[in-house]
Image: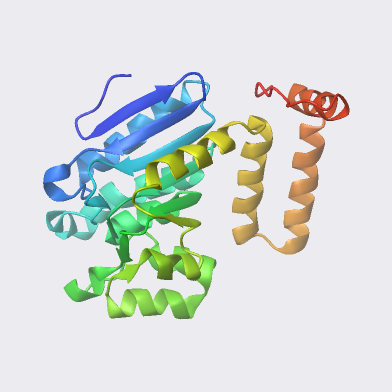
Amino acid sequence: MEDLETVLIEFDETSGVGTITLNRPESLNALNDQLSRDIVTGLQRLEEEELRVAVIEGVGEKAFCAGADIGGFSSESSVERSERPVHTFVSEFPVPVVAKIDGYCLGGGFELALACDLRLASADSEFGFPEVNLGLLPGAGGVQFVTKLCGPATAMELAMRGEHVSAEWAAEEGLVNHVYSPDQFESEVDDFVAQLAGQAPLAIRAIKKSARMAVDAGRSEGRQYDRRLFNELLTTDDFAEGAAAFSEDREPEFEGR
């Protein structure tokens, strides 16, 4: 798959895993308008394939994404143009998006990771919202994301102090799903993503919809939504295959239909 100016794109037809690699090593993969647009374009291209899981990572071992270019903070309009659309697009993308974090994950880059559905980090990674040191707040929903994941106290501590925190601390607070040692990071992430991609695709998409609905909906509305999704899945070929595989004591072969 053809790469973009600031993003490398890969798609594995066998597994259905697509990878978006942020490719601005000279700036520690900092977000700018071009990179934000390329992430969206790259995901749109992957969506045209039989995509099961999307992975976002940063090139090199120093940073997933070290934030946004300071020049990108020069006006409110630039924040509106660049950061909000990409974070919203990632959050609303139909298949699971996994943030593969190795190194600095700061500011807008941290918000990009939080917009993903799952976050896997190396033990060497560092997280934080340094915007307060510029007289700003995280402009792409960082406080909102962390409040919903961990509560307002944790969100305010991160945003108000502006300090870096370790991957272990982030995992303890529920901001990161798993932390792996640097020497096992690549293989552990590959295994995690492969296992996720092997699950029933339509069910996985429905689970993502349910989780996103739960963030904003009341419990009753959310349960009604889940019931509707459940009934829809009962009519799929994947459910028939899963039931048959269970009764025949074999591994299912899901095809996303």
